[in-house]
Length: 426
Image (cartoon, rainbow, N blue to C red; front, side):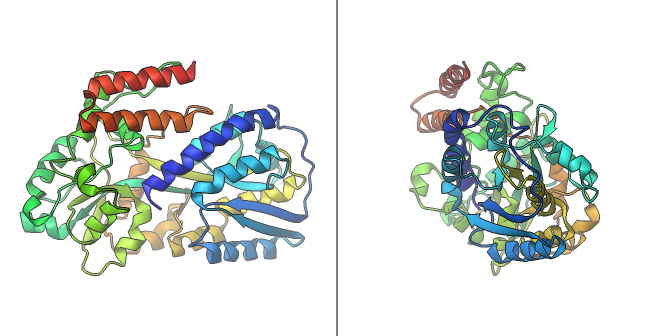
């Protein structure tokens, strides 16, 4: 799944929030009975189309261990998912359980669409909170309460082509690289005459907020009431991204709107470094003649890594609360779910049991799979603007595009974007 598709999904979810606020009450602690048996509906975006068989395997084991409960799976394409979810909730036909990503979780929790899960978690002898990755568990809490069970995570790393590095006599990237190290290597590795580029990092909201964090900056003020990404640290982060197109990576004009241009460039051996997510690993590992590895992304004043997290939430209006909780817990932490996800490269389970990842770490390529977990030490979660997420992301990306095309200076673009985002908050 590409970064672009993730951005589209976050945008759709934020748009849905406008209707959610009107459709849901603010107190979701009541209204759900303790239905412990029957059919539980589950709506998901990550299973289709590549992992439906894997989900069926998890579902079959759950139903075997929980006689009397049947899970009915519903799926939607990632780009359509949140619009359909919002429509179902607004129409009173919400699924009992559904998948949420971090960017949209806060909006749905604040809208009262989710059932708080702490009481059921405490009463469930089969639930071990410590088995879940602590930072993932914290990410899906709202006002101190658990509203969704973390199920998976994936993060962004620096992929690199070992053959290109070796041919150019450039040392391979290391975990302590800085932006300066990356830039120096990219310049040596770029050979436009041969169509080889040293680096590729999209100039978008998602890359900017991360670069800002790598530079020690803050996207919003401490009280969350004002955009602050147009300060000196934000300008430096923007200039870092903007310095790449036309020098060490292709320009937007050179790409010409070609879908998955960066993927094709890397798999064809024409790209030395690529900022992308670990969901690319299985595809790259099957590419003949490609010798690659990964490392955590370079920082400037500090390390900061983008991490995407998904979780299973329970509808505030469900009539099968107990059964729904059991399914959410099983998806997040059961041995069957963990083993199935790892075997199928269906992202990674959000569990803290490192022994569970032994089989994953032993697979090659890439040799340095440990970088996937090293990245979790310095997480940079995206800023979330309740009910305005898509607008915020579009404002920032469009501002960066203006700067890239010369329609505005980087400072002017950031100033305009910060003013527009602050207006959204107010």
